[in-house]
Amino acid sequence: MSKHKIEFTLPADLKFSSLVRRISEEIFHYVGFVTEWAERLKLVVDELFMNANHYGSSGPEDKIYMRFEFDNNEVTFRIDDEGKGENKTTAEELRKKIKKNSDEMADITKTNGRGLALISNLWTDEMAIEDGQYGGIAITFTKKITTSAPPALPPIQPLGPGVATSAIPRGTKEEIKVTGEIDASNLAEKVKPVEEKLKILSPGSTLILDCKELVYFNSTFIGHMAAWINQLHAKQGSLVLKNANPKIQEVLKLVGLTKVLYLES
Image (cartoon, rainbow, N blue to C red; front, side):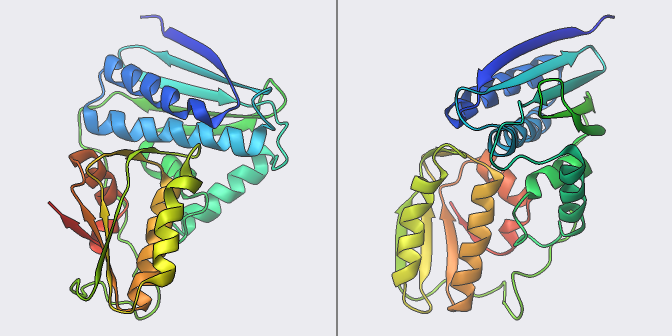
């Protein structure tokens, strides 16, 4: 059977992140992946789109090129940027960065670039990083269609030296709502209220994030959560997530954060 191909080009603008995720999820479901795999592969594509914006583009006037190819056995995704960003990197430099982050992957406080390390180690059968045809980097991954359960992450290390992960939430409780889809396009505005609250929390306090209206967050937000847990534990405090939907809980379990925070129904 010949492979089907879906190609599209978007401006290098993070406001299209949500659209990219929706297209990706539809395609992964269509080709036959179970929901658990479709969710993970959608996150892979989101990471790669964010990476192409951050490292390979200077603004919406630049373009990002995406292609899905699939048959009954596997799906291949490719993304190209134009290499015009101020943070431009080479294919070789990116490969080295992924290798470094892969070596540090067990430490959830090492969050910068962790998404690509997850991709190359756990969620793809094959991944290639090379010089692209549009002047920047091209990243391609292939995944065989499977109905087996996705792999778990390796065991994580403790959150910082001497931090107890079993402290019972106590003391003053402060609550903040987190809503919608959190990605690179709106991350700063979403984390600001939490950062401001952390500055004034008294020792021993519990910070509650009400996630009832939270739909999605990316790996960078996960990195912020790891940092918040560190800050709270240093003050004998705790982080609680309330009303998180099953998809959010699954991602938290996937990256090991359920071992160092509390989930409340």
